[in-house]
Amino acid sequence: MNELALKDLLYKLADDQLILGHRNSEWTGFGPILEEDIAFSSMAQDKLGHSLAFYTLLHELGEAEPDTVAFTRNAEQFHNSQLVELPNGEYDFSLIRHFLYDNAEIIRFEMLSQSGYEPIAKVATKLKGEVKYHVLHANTWIKNLGASTEEAILRLQASLNEALPYALGMFEKSKYEQELIEAGVYAGEEAVKAEWLNRIQTVLAKTELKLPALESIEPVLGGRYGVHTEHLQPLLSEMSEVFDIDPTAEW
Amino acid sequence: MTKEHILTLLEEVKDPEIPVLSLVDLGVITDVIISEAAHVTVHMTPTFAGCPAMDYMKKDVERTLEKYGISSYSVIMSFDNPWNSNKVSEKGRIALKEFGLAPPPTYNLILDLDILEYAECPYCNSTNTTLRTPFGPTLCRSMHYCNDCRQMFEQFKPL
Image (cartoon, rainbow over all chains, first blue to last red; front, side, top):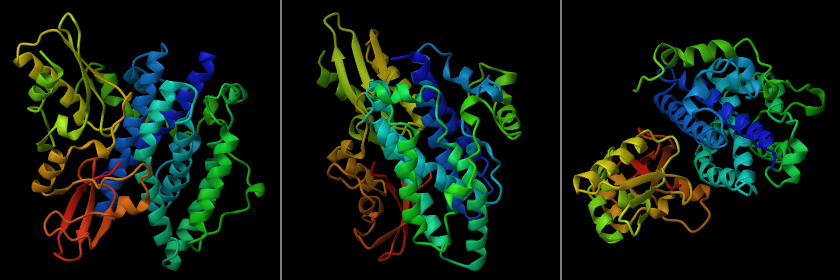
């Protein structure tokens, strides 16, 4: 198997988790209710752990130590989708992003648990069980709030419309896409996207929310190739503040 | 020196956040291998990948081995034999309940939504309970409400 293709896949998985993990952590102390504060903080911790598992696999393939990889790259070296780097906005936007993202993530992990590349399969087998709780959390709130008051529905619908072009960017294909599929490492973005649509539509059908016609939406691409919004670099600078002062600090 | 002997020593190492539960009963010690040269290899696996206590537990295992005069050892953390909540021993389940934490319900192969929401109140044993949030004070706990004795309680999450 081409190592560059494997690394490309691992970086996109790891970077998505790290960046969304950081965004989730920004809710600590600010959640609209205590349970949500705890939920987003817990998901932040999970996602950091998930990114560490993939950075560890990268390290085994010869990349630098996980901390070095996480804290010393610039925005254009990150492979995350732009969806995860967008600012949290208000709770409705964070919830919609969480719903769109985690429903895709669990499918990736389910598919990767069948991967022909054993180290990825092992990690994915473990993580898919953990992400189940993230999906349960997102789907429960979308179903509750998406069928509640007029304000909640309007806000969620506006956030859904805003997030969707970025969410479609999650499925931007790698330049190694065909190779990974043929080698049996990964089922590929088209397969993930098709199943994702299925699942989010099932949940949205239980609410007053409408999924905009996808044909009319231009996906925001580039994230997987290092093209990012102006929001990523400030996030990275903040995240690496302690590391930059003292790379050997332990806490 | 046998595997059983090492496992008995490791009974001493507790989950730092649930001090009544040993790592052996938690199910995170997946194997102990003793080589002919008496080198001890302890295999461990995390409960949750992001659990900040895992590193602490690993160091605790190392400290305990040294305390009992075992100087040739390695402790390896991996996902080779991944943890799931069915690995919590019967003894561990009783300890959890006595600690006031509902033990994870055991399940058969597929963990579906019904199991995630199911919890038995550790105070009054009622199953008339509601999942309040799948996230709690640590990654491995969810929060539930007992509709009978009307108390909040935590559950060690099924995974």
